[in-house]
Length: 131
Image 1 (tube, helix red, strand yellow):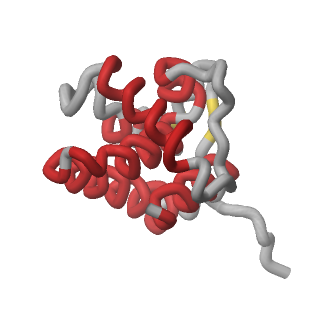
Image 2: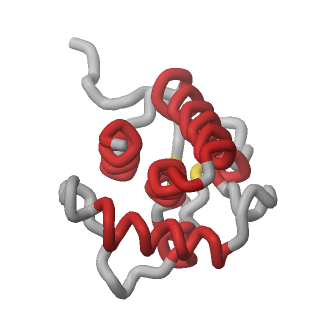
């Protein structure tokens, strides 16, 4: 009988980086739009605040606690961080489109190619698809 669990050879390290079976860091560089220069941490914090104060009121299924900063979210849940940024950047359409493309690349890599499933991926998809 086939095993229902993912056959992907991924493992999570203490630093929250995900590695594939070749030992390469997977998707961390793609998701880190701050390190890639797409926006600053200050802008990211502003988008997190917009999501938390304006958007969560209308779609309270993924709530970011008030004590969680953009830096915390970036380190602990990078995919959710990207989803929130892509959703909350509606005031800057070129940036929102760019972040949306990055989000889709990560989905293609982690879910479709690698077969990864996680609560963070579900949260990120809920946020992105709702907005």
